[in-house]
Image (cartoon, rainbow, N blue to C red; front, top):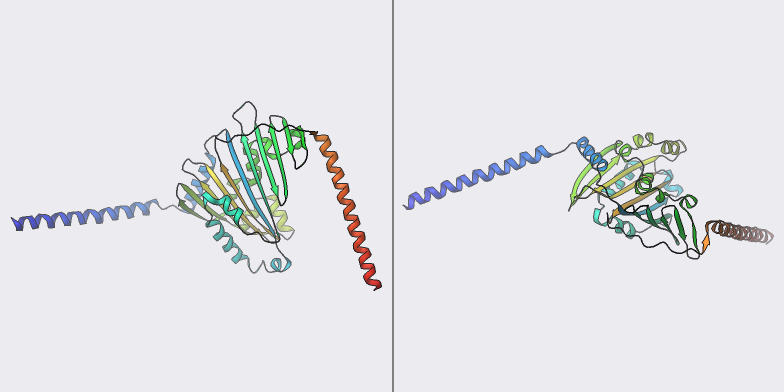
Length: 321
């Protein structure tokens, strides 16, 4: 009996071992079969962008850092193009979908850089489009509200009333016009890909697309003009984050030019749960705003004239000395 039992146990162990090996082999084969080519990943990404779920309200946050290079950096850009491209690719690939906005906000900013942040809320659930946009650049902050054709501009002083046509802000045309007006034709950009990496970060699928600079410049008239003027694109990396519901929740663009570079992150959040408060009461009109702006320009011009005169006087005195 003991011998029979031992044979049965040995047989079971052997059977289990065969099953495990077969299972691993099958899994390996399945994984191998599931491996996608770059072209398949690109097609998948374009399909995801083209088939975004519908929504009536959303919050769009844009954090932008523009850096202007000094002469030494510009002169050495041609020899350092490959290194720049690798650095841009590495930076974009390491971005995290869940924290892209905070990461951009916490990054140290170069002394030659200009940082701006824009938060725009869209609500198309009612009869008319409502928007609320806060623009922050350096120490300047402005807020625009709109409800249908009516709009107000909130400053650190007066609140100006007018129409959406008068203020002429991009968000007044709705989310799609505002977003795609800022990022351009994504399909055209993606078609310029050189390499693409797809990875899973929790419930978010991240596609890091490194563009071919020559193809990218050839695809855009403005970029072609910049190239002809001596400011070509040296490298460009677009990182797309798609959540489990198929929504584009983040887009980061790192583009390095001969003279400058940009790092822009667009984050989409609060789908169908964005709430816009009531429009503030205005105490001045759009026409009064134009008048106030003219006065400020005149004051600034006067201050600059005084500064120039002071500098010229100082130089003359130095010459006399």
